[in-house]
Image 1: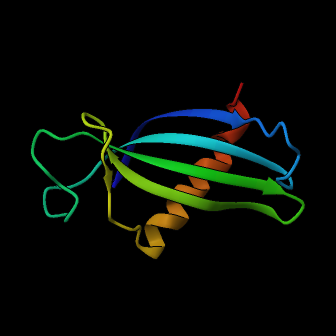
Image 2: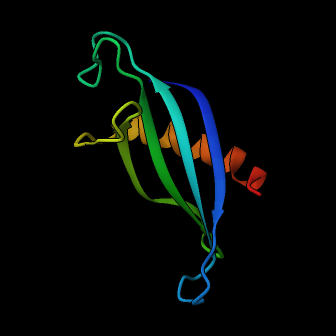
Image 3: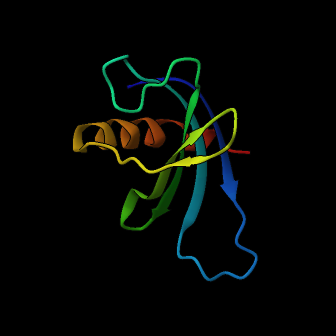
Length: 97
């Protein structure tokens, strides 16, 4: 899996219910042809919700999406991939407007 693009936004919590801050990242991803997510002609996004609080940064939710149809795909990240995505999110969440 290769991250080819990204967008990041801070999630507003007008209720004050959430502890810390939350960020939504849309990661454009490219998967190799031998990956079960691969489908010819289909672009994929990975939507990630990152929590940032006194305990640190962590992924609280993610899902794969077909960029063309916005359909949510029922796949999970492997442990190594999740660590890679978390590192990427930690590096870029501060860019949120």
